[in-house]
Length: 350
Image (cartoon, rainbow, N blue to C red; front, side, top):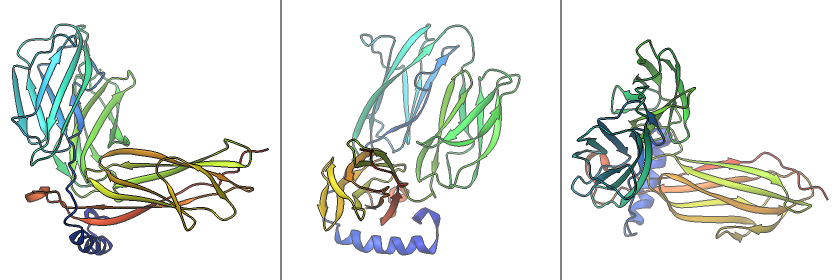
């Protein structure tokens, strides 16, 4: 369970985590990078009418004086917007003139507050100039908890069409909205219990592949923040089977000391591994010094076996309080773990 689940089991885990992390207090501080969570216009979106502003939402607070956005119709013609405002974790851009039809590139630079790192990126959207729909999305509140209901609002969608809603990096279904004759909708949606702590994207799409994004902060989120899954396939050689372990930090915790342990199943032997795996006392071990929000892996092992075989992996991880944090930024320290089991897989036939 998690510190954000408010359960007794969670607090016992936290107590252990606090003791462990106090002993590790002299370890060097890791630097989390701001990540773009949602944008309007959305990446690859096509707008019928030119937008009068841009809005980019990140998963961490930003340093106002150092963060920036530039806009261009071509990569040779970058121009800073006429007005840029930084509000916490959002970059809001007012455009000085109406955009002509064409493809536009948005180039952003986000500098985290309180000594956090710098990230930059680029994406594109299209203004068609055909005066068609220009979908937008919003939420009723900036923060909520997993399991709570939020109001999701849309405008500028094609009239009388269904719009599919999803939340989180893994696009967990959030429900369906129906645009009225004006292209607007407002629906109540319950945040799924498994959605983890952090600034989570809300994505809306329709049957015409039009898309809009917004975001909501989830304070008390589902557990574990680190998801893991294992897949198996026969081969590559006769008498062999390959297992792949994939990881995803779906939260805004910067996880440290991620340790993946996979006992070698009885009756099998290790043929090959990738990554920096080591075999100790019959257990394969992979170690990742840190894992910010996002995916890692897959970590692969090839086993020789005579019969169908399944694996059981244990993944341990920890989180320390951010360096020089204050207020709500001082997130709880903890140590925790999750597991990943495969289904039985038969080896490649001779």
